[in-house]
Amino acid sequence: MAVTNRHLCQGDFLAQVEKIASRRPGGILLREKDLPEEAYASLAQEVATLCKAWSVPLYLHTFPLPVQAVRAAGLHLPLMRLRQASTARELPQARIGASCHSVAEVQEAAGRGCSYVIAGHIYATSCKEGLPGRGLSFLQSVCRAAGTMPVYAIGGITPDRMTEVLSAGAAGVCVMSGMMRDSEWWR
Image (cartoon, rainbow, N blue to C red; front, side, top):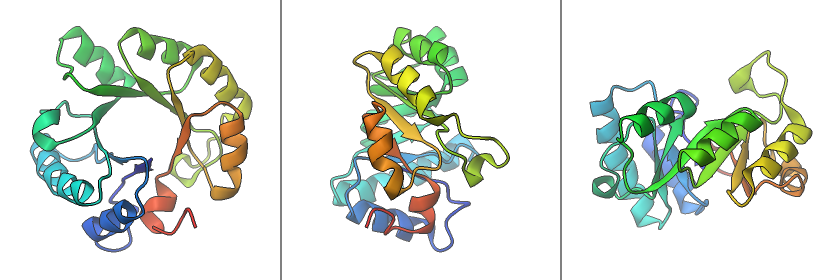
């Protein structure tokens, strides 16, 4: 899954998203959480059009917008936002995922109705500068705790690390920096 961050994009953001979509990743997670909700909703509509053109699922992030209106495949939330939304019964009828950083968080996400989680950061990454990666043993523990719920690994994932990440039990990977800076990441 490609994860967006327009601050990492060195050119036109929508052009980069289209390049990524043209390679047909398993999905695009629109992670522009610093935008006000109205601006995010507008950007989501533009990205949804690109995703639809390339038949790539779009996952929204942070804001429980009307997922069906945006033609999104699901909604991804930071765990704190998942707690708030599930308590307030604001979750849409859609595929819901959460970002998790421990076994306990994965178990909580499952209990709150998530159908997948993104676990990280696995390796050191410039997005979490100065913090060591949690490593493959962390990923293995999280995958065991998740049971049948898919776990997607994030953080410092490079093409040469994919085999070991998948061997640790991950259902797939999420890539932000590599996708935003180089749409040919998976070559």
